[in-house]
Picture (tube, rainbow, N blue to C red):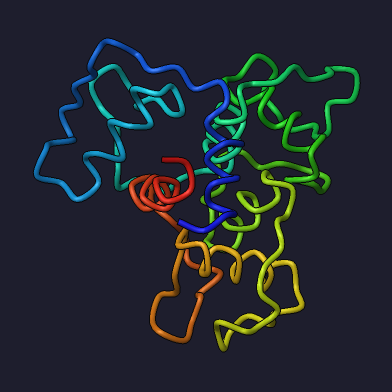
Length: 193
């Protein structure tokens, strides 16, 4: 795997502790293509199910879920509650500290967070890329629908050349398409394992 992927492994694996207990979800079985990835993020504390026995792998990943995964992968560093960046963050929610951390790192910005919004391919790769301090990417256009000089272009190029995420076909990134939890976990597998 490329140097950036090795750096990513070192960066994102900090703070992950393997749980000895195995979790069983009624909507996840060994025959599923995403089974290993779901069990990996669950057993390593990166993500929980929607209940004790349900994971909902085909549900769209939300903004709250994404920043929480990245925050946990970073080892849940301390955050300052002095400047809560968005007025729409539920105080005491599972994602509150993750959103504050993501705002402090420049991963998320704006006037509102809208935690339940489904994550697009664009939001996912830019957030992951920023969480790694925006590593260098090849200055070439990989996709016809993304310009290489934009933030998305740099993040998508980095993701492509490091085996994290590909296009929806050989020439398109399809930035506005939303991602399911199972899809995101598969992409993360290439970044953190």
